[in-house]
Amino acid sequence: MKIEGKTVCVTGAAGFLGSHLCRALISRGARVIALDDFSVGQRQRLTEIADDIDIVMVDIRDKDNLKEHIQKSQIVYALAAIANPRACQKDFSYTFDVNIKGTANVLSLCSNVARVIFPSSIMVYGEPKYLPIDDRHPIDARDPYSISKIMCEHLLKVYNYLNGIPFTIVRNSNVFGPGQDRDYLIPTLIIEGLTRKQIEIWDPRIIRDFLYIDNCIDALIKVVESESTLGEIMNLGSGQGIATGELADMVCKYLHTTWVDVKRPSPVSSKLISDITKVKALTGWEPKVSLEEGLQRTIEYYRSVVKLDSSGKGGG
Image 1: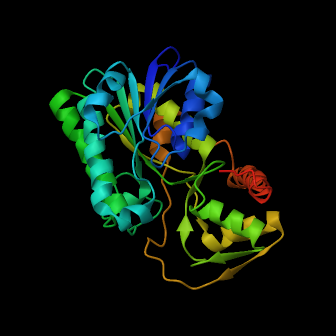
Image 2: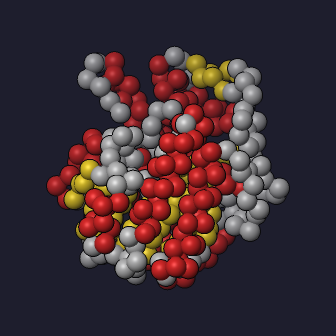
């Protein structure tokens, strides 16, 4: 199914992932309905494309106000969620309300939608039993964020069974890039390096699979354009892992600074690397932007943000 000419609804459109997705959809000729309540998402992320999309302020927990926007869409990207694992840990009741009940509201209105894309997370696997992690790996996560993703995956299957809703689930690895909230790992490393001239690392041995935002968005669009992805669950990442210490070395090289291990215990899995064989086979997608290039682009973005902050003009 081609994106061009389709009406595409993006919930959580003012988030990091959502705003980049809206830009890409416009460039491919889609009519975009951008939904967000702006409680977490930042309206300014959509400023440059505001004239090219329909921006609607709505909470996904408000089913009545969601209805007209979902039901006139042919494709729905169900991105809206509390996406920060630490925020989910702090208030699981709120996370349950937004991530699970809110997603259920969206899905209940998708009976006539041609495809629903749901971004889950590689974190649903918990501590891996083998690497790289494929979609057949046991689901064994216990943290609130991952549990909310697991429950939403089951909701998609339920609504498919009840109403025939066509869906695809994509389990993202660690996506990064310009515009990401500052409390995520890579923005934190970069901003510390730019402002404090030294980077703090909790545990340099933790291994993660980092995917540059442009690669992620390209995959999310190719998933819709491929009929072979209907009803499938697939992992999305670079397919390669890097230790936090090595990542810090790369950032330090570009910023001419150093890092220090502050030796704090980490509550998350020690190693997460995606097996991306399936998404490549079904869509023909390949990551185009390397980790190194993605880091350089991201560093340049935050360099400009820090300059704006220091001049008193803000940034984000």
